[in-house]
Image (tube, rainbow over the protein chains, first blue to last red):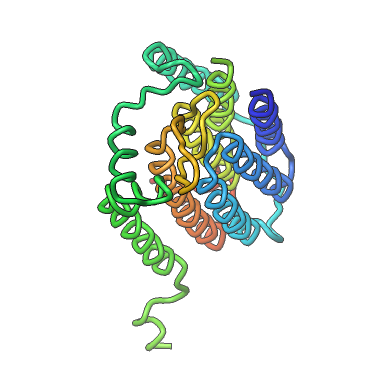
Length: 175
Length: 112
């Protein structure tokens, strides 16, 4: 129990460093620390599939973010519109914390989940003789969700290629 | 319950970063932190005290298992988080090529 608290505190410290660091490269490295901490929390929460997935995704997104920030480390201004920005932060935080307070009243306490739907899935996985329940939910009971996920990935790749293309076909032909 | 509150603090840091900072990369980082906090909250809800991983073994009886449904949903959510980061970084690099800066107050060519 204690290790989960410690790991989440580590994640909060790394997130504060990522938000407040002056240059962009160190804040990108700090967000990598947050992701690795999240992977360890998943392992402590008995979710090994998620820990593996989070590790892979974290490394990929770290590479992408470093590609975006390398040699573009500019000083950025901090002046101007102090009152507007701070008041909007306070407004958003009040809205979020009110909603979170309402939601936490309905949530079951930590360590004793309401296993309503999950028991049906576990019985189904037992009758199918599947070893990994998470994989059986992802690939069998909720296969349409996974199809949607793959569609989103494909759409993202198409979108990134369309955005990152240097010149259009027509312009390239004319020059 | 304190774990939920720590998770809320993590989300609040991400929200502050998105609303307050003026650098595009910082905003992407804030969205990433919020993403992590939401994933963590889902898995925390499904945790059971003294539970086992949701994996069956042939030679032993497993009666207490953590909730596998949030884990399955978060597995999808993590991949979609990667897709969001990828698309945002592509747009940010494009904006940098056009304007030469990541500062969102300097990106104002569309203003009439």
